[in-house]
Length: 584
Image (tube, rainbow, N blue to C red):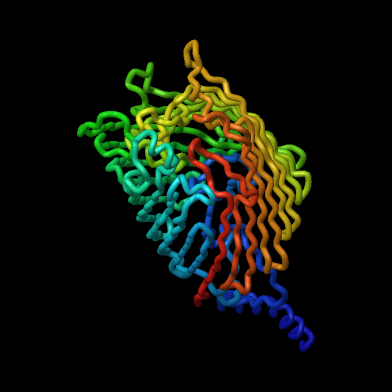
């Protein structure tokens, strides 16, 4: 009897344990102990370094290198799992502010300030302030007079998330840029106007711009498949200048996207982008810089126009191909009213294929579009343009073949061939309306451009990064009649090249060295010679909050002319520091 009782008791023990688990809810915490290696995704550094160019006019020649890695959004929708609760480490200190101060030769101060709110899951707000300028004459060329220039800007920004799915954002900014139409000598002034430098003031040939901008955006942060996502943005800007020119711009844009299945095997995402871009330009013709050779009038030049674009497209993976397929439809209200048609149609197709386990990526694209060429954008390319420029548009069809080859984790190469058919492509020529030959008109060409280029990047962990690349350009001009205008080839180099080295020594010393070559260009005053530029910056980081830097531009001390009649400074050196205050 005793033996049977023991056997029965042993048999009931598992049932009792199961009953105990059902009665008490599972409620335990897991404490993980051991070595921990944090991994931080690649992100933008909270840093606004000074971009001091090696001349008094900004260099805007674009280099098109595709060496930055791009994260592709996977369209696989995995099953959701519940996150495990782990007792983590305390939050680290945040660096939510940044101050950079410096001073260079030619009386060239710079200042950059950044401040934002600290860590918050729902909101972010802050301010950015920047200033850089130069207040001296051209070294060893005193006959050109003062060559002052500067840029100052301030931006307030904020973002708030509503209900964890809706993001509201806004920013308000003001920018002031100033420079002088200094491209004339004392002898030119005496010959053309019969005046000396003492007879005129800086206000007679000053160019300055003020731009106030307000942006408001809303974005649905829902990323689940088979749910509609959307975003909308409003951009309003007003530009007014020293010569009473004014440009008002209103841009409205919106996007929607939706995920879908193809044959229950492939996934895709459909997008629709819509945009309306409107401009209003005005300028009293009587307000002009020094040297205007025509009879002024009190009439106000006024132009109003807009462009409307609709871009439906879809992105999906199909048997190893990444396909982007769509079109761009639009109405061009900024082009010449006598144009054959204002309705525009452009392709928007890109096909990519990965080979050799993703080490080789081949891409073919046929794309196009049209954009506004506004006073606010053209002055950033050439700050010496006429004050009475009205917004217009430029269109392009682009056909591209691109290859990327990752030899290993340290070495990557890119090669690209493109052929672009461009209409109303802008360039510049000295205005015949100004006798001092120091003010530029914007002129337009219809042209075809063949571009062959590539780059090579070598990265050895985080200690050294080498980059080298270049492009060759060939232009064919169309619709120019029997005689090609001389200005059609102005300021278009046949080739360019770039070589840069970045060194990181024990996270204390950082060195950046860059060399740039720009081929010969035709201009209003003959051929501009080969431009070669060398720039370097060395930075010593004393600790996480304090560092010191020395930057040098145009270290080859070349006196080049980026624009005819506008010589550059020979060399610019800037010494400064950065400081950050840690927060809790």
